[in-house]
Image (cartoon, rainbow over all chains, first blue to last red; front, top):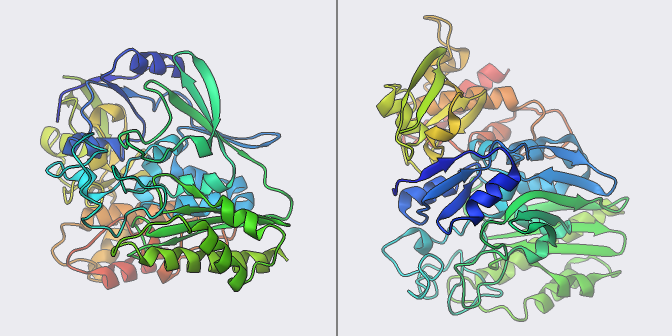
Length: 323
Length: 165
């Protein structure tokens, strides 16, 4: 591991200035992903700026909903009484991720900014455009089980590993960001990007920009929501596919995980289902429309039926509870 | 090299550590605290679990320098004097181990899990707002961050159930 300078700033602005001021600097939050990257050589910053002491660790109820500090631990957010009572999809997406120990360590923003678990990204002896741009993608014709089926490119076929990001996608969350030029907000939907020809960039954030909070609007009265995750083990495994959903009156919101380089908000499906019956046949037909642009290989073809079946199960169940 | 101070199992320790050292390596190699074990060193097995400021935590995925001033309790610091902690005793009573390498992490994780269970739902919880009932399914889910290669899971489950009762 490369030796680095360790800095512990006192304010978010100080942290931003430290990272923005050096191409070689990176933020350190909970560390559950970055420390592993330091060990295996995926990341080798010269300066680590610890954002753990910045006081970004509060969950506040606001007029419009919830404001979640970037440093709130995943376990604390999942256990928050308001999250448990009003935002089931948020609690369940958090609880589906990682292990209890890691949820105590990992933060809200760190979870969103975690990097892919593609086996080739982790194996520094293999080509990977995300780890080393221009070297090629080993996953396209390699081990495909965890590959994307939507929005992939020739350069990268991996998926975003976060469950929380999928839960927040369906809640229309907003991300508050502090940068060297001041503060801005962006929809969570615009945070993660598709790989295109620059898969080394997971997000639209510029170097030195720090997520300070995530805000979640209040759900409509009577809304029901949940998160379903299909995986190879019963616990502590990344998603093969996952489904976050909200049903509120005529409105249906669905986001998929495990299928793309970012949380996949299923807008075509949502439009097809608006105001209609949420029975198995209708939902399956809407999934077929959403999946029209999907591309699969021998190792990923199963995901079409898996995400369709999971979505039908989740939505028919929510429809039953919403009545 | 940065200097850090910790409280480990009730005793203060301090010393210079390599800025790159994980909390696990600092404990084991710098401060001779060998109770937490290095299994996978990537956060997948849970053998390095300690209670860090009261909560179960993976020391292999934490930089020592980021935890200056922390209170660490390892499995060796759970009991009172010569008396084993009830969870550790239950592991013995129920054969919750074979080789024992994962046991310090398992015991710390179980103690942390029992302390946090009230008020924290899990993936296995049907009603997010209900009081936690530690069924077999709940215990298995809540302990999924600790692997046992010897497969002593039936004994581990029985041990934790006995203490949870």
